[in-house]
Image (tube, rainbow, N blue to C red):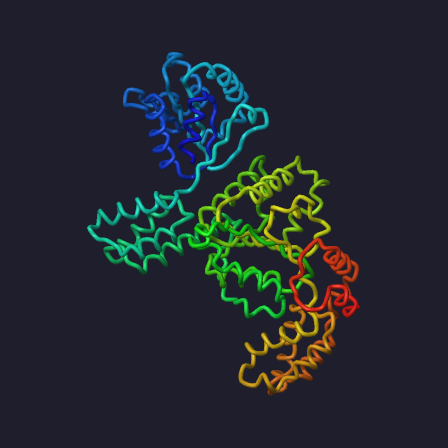
Amino acid sequence: MFKDEFELLLRARYPLIYIPTLEEERLEETIALSAKNCGNRAVYVWDFVDGYQANPNDNGAARRNPLQALEWVEQLGTSAPAIFILRDFHRFLEDISVSRKLRNLARALKSQPKNIVVLSPQVQIPQDLQEVFTILEFPLPDRQAIQKSIEQVLGATGRSLERRVLTEMVRSAQGLSLERIRRVLARAIATHGELQADDVELILEEKRANIRQTQILEFYPTTEKISDIGGLDNLKEWLLRRGGAFSERARQYGIPHPRGLLLAGIQGTGKSLTAKAIAHHWHLPLLRLDVGRLFGGLVGESESRTRQTIQLAEALAPCILWIDEIDKAFAGIRGQGDSGTTSRVFGTFITWLAEKDSPVFVVATANNVQTLPPEMLRKGRFDEIFFVGLPSTDERQAIFEVHLSRLRPQNIKSYDLDRLAYETPDFSGAEIEQALIEAMHIGFSQNRDFTTDDILEAASQIVPLARTAKEQIQFLQDWAAAGKARLASRGNSLTRRIQGQR
């Protein structure tokens, strides 16, 4: 808990504390409470425009002068307990006089009941100051804080909500700052004079906008069902068995929250479709993480984005975090020359994977496991690693049936599914879908419905990836055959499937 950890740092006389957050007001309220708990310490707040604002007599001391703001700390008696909050001070850390003064204070304040707290929207600490600062994460508001805020708004309007609606509103608001929650509630009241059950959708829209602003996470709508996946029976059975694993009943039974899945295999075999179907079947929000966008140009920015992403995902829990093509983000990590940024981001991420106890189910997909660091494949990061290979004949028939049931539900019996499956060896699910689209173009251009022959003609013009990337696919199949992953498909052994695919 942040408050307990912060008070521990105060009592342990950690001189310089760095807290990255966008919730300045809520954090300062929390610090004020901690100051009372730790000997009723005085709190002094400084910013570049107004200077110190502890009381009216200060009259903006050290206004527009960050070095003077630090010197002001020394003007208090050495035994006077105090907390100095410096807003946006990360902008001045590159200044040599500020940097030197901070290092001097880091030594001097170890023997004094004083602490300097830097508030910043992001972690941006020069290398020469990294040893003297202690970074402390300030989490987004939890359920209790959100519910208290909503109840305060309800009290001001003199109205109430059903317990069920209030619970849904609190759950919908998770992942937003209190300031954003208050804004959207004010918007709802301005619209129809009170809070209503329909305002849950307003909160969800605010959440989607907030996630879009990160430019890292994307709130992904899901309509795909498990039944939309052709084949992959072992994987589907594994998922269906865990359908209720996020419920309170599962906690009482003693089952821990499921951690996640790594889906490794050939492109176009349904890995991304599976991620969407999991979210839909489990009725959980789906967040898509673009790992490439984690990496920023400024020192410390990538690590800050990673922490922000983890914090937001945990605040939105229970949810599905979908990381598509994770192999591209961390490929060849040991040889990258980026001052260790990629290694630090990777280290933060896999440590969280191993230690998280929040109900965030991670679904990572990878096309080329050969480039993944061994740490990613180690037991404990994911509940299971599944190999998703090329579909067998029976699975191709199931894939054709799924697509044709959607495209031509009235006359699906007019298509020869057995023949289609037999005539498309080495085809992935994505290639089957492409053949159907091309067949529709053939039929449409001739003012008639498309037929089995049209599909086969379209398929004959497609060169499957299994033939153009034989070496990569052979490596993946051999890797799975060696027992490195569980097979997503049921039926014949992998060895026989490999022989049938050659």
